[in-house]
Figure 1: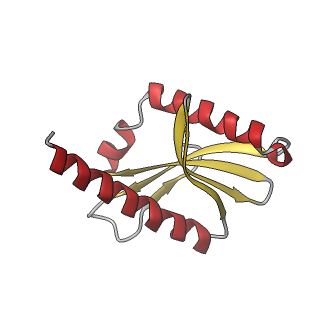
Figure 2: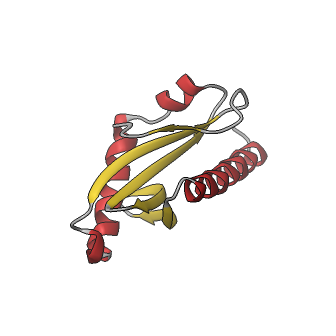
Length: 119
């Protein structure tokens, strides 16, 4: 992939993450972190709804299946590790339930597909 195409893909991904963050807010979630990066991994969005902390992986792909296939077991582990680091830094959330969601953005859907408990 050329540098220019990589930049374009990163920009599309950031726009998708921002759009998903707004949709989560409309659904009653409070977005706590956007692009939380650690040496152990990264979480696109960390949100809270009630007593649940949700790690959200955002994928913009040509279709829903492609989006789901893009979340590998290795990536799931890195997201889980990053969320654990976030929780260790924000102890007030340690008693909360934890959930891992995926939100798939595709051209074929007017609204991103929100998959709760994706793994």
